Image: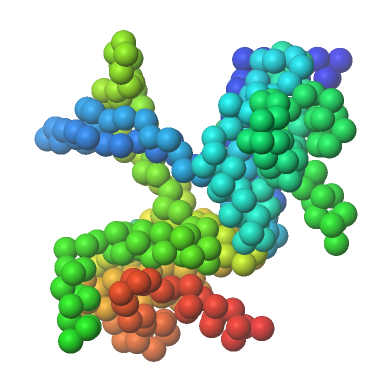
Length: 183
Length: 183
Ligand SMILES: [Mg+2]
Ligand SMILES: [Mg+2]
């Protein structure tokens, strides 16, 4: 079937690959302008060979201070993080960093739209997690509650998204509905 | 005088440093959430020494596909580029890349706010250049017109900004006025 072909061709792709493809589709169709931020590196040593490009010879990965993706759709500021888990039962909150939660809180205060796309890789299921759902789980954890979000919470409080061919992970259609429901 | 002290302490700072300071001020005051994008690098070789951090041993600078800065202020998507010139008479358009102009065009189409901050370093003067001014000059250049924007155009069609102590380059105040004038 078409469905099977599509999953087959996407086997081995990371969630990041799938989202990058989706963003390229949005960009080409002029639906939205959303890019992945480059990985932040601390550059220590650069060589400048004559007649060829500068080579970075010593650099270190830095902790990102924000989320993976941001951009603009129809006047809305869009900002999100992509996370994968191999677990079949829950999403471990250790996958999320405090500075990312703080960043999403700040974005929300500035009336931006922020969320997390979570892929359960073993189950091949994708969910759009509104920030308030993540934030609530985070706050409960900080008060001594559980350190993960159970799949049942995903099923009841987030929006499951069916992967397609192109766009692969059409998260903007979900976001449009969320905005429409709020207004 | 206060003015002189302030310029003295900022001597040697790049425009990027000044804007980063400004964004830190905005962030700390919760005025806006605007970050510099990391420099994109193509990572070729990474070493993983035992018991210490991964070291990037070969990497190359890639051409950025977008602008230097983006983020959100009060529900508005903000996206801009910072450029310096040593010229005293005009801003050479070779400082701007075609993909940056295209990106700004796309952002404008999606109702984002986009502009360029240009510093004439020798003159110690700063200007906020609305995208339409840059775009017009760019289009004229593509039709065989001049390859730079004269200082007189900055003085007549853009907004000069006086550097301050903190925030150093208060570009958001200018943007707020521009938005208010449009509505
Ligand atoms: Mg991620
Ligand atoms: Mg720049």
